[in-house]
Amino acid sequence: MAKIDDIKKTLGEGVNIAREGVAYAAERAEDLSLAAALRLRIFGLRRRIERHYAELGAATYYLLQKNADVSADAAVKKHVKNIKALEAEVNKLFAQITDATPKSRTGQKRAAASQKKKAGSARAKRSRKTGR
Image (cartoon, rainbow, N blue to C red; front, side, top):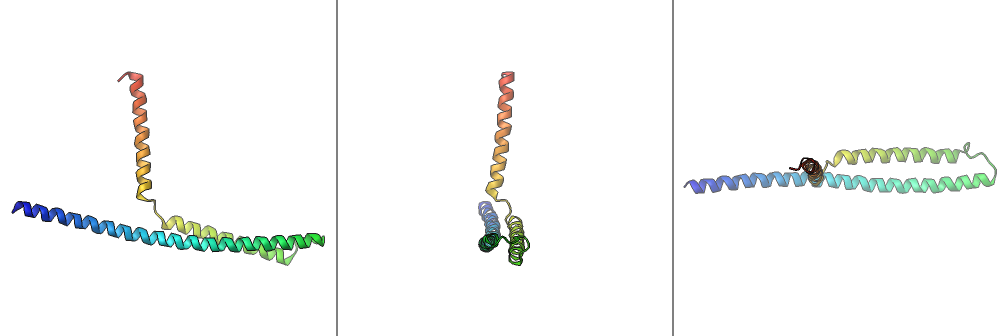
């Protein structure tokens, strides 16, 4: 009977571990979908910034052809203002992405592995010096 209780206990622990894994996967999927949505929004904002740059360049070219003051033109000021506002929004979205996406487990494993490798190479250097 003791073996059956041990099996039940082991299976119960496995179920708990599986639940934790599913919960982590769901949380991670939610974070990644949020990050993907933010990246898509950033892409759209960058396209708008590019359009403003194109219109700004066209307006500047037109004003230079007329020998007019570029910095005093209302259209130029409007495009510069819009570009600055859109770039600020892009920066805010990038900050949200970094907040929404925690470091992955693989990234943590890689960092730990590189630290172990560094520690191992330091031991190897010491052993060469001492002959041990």
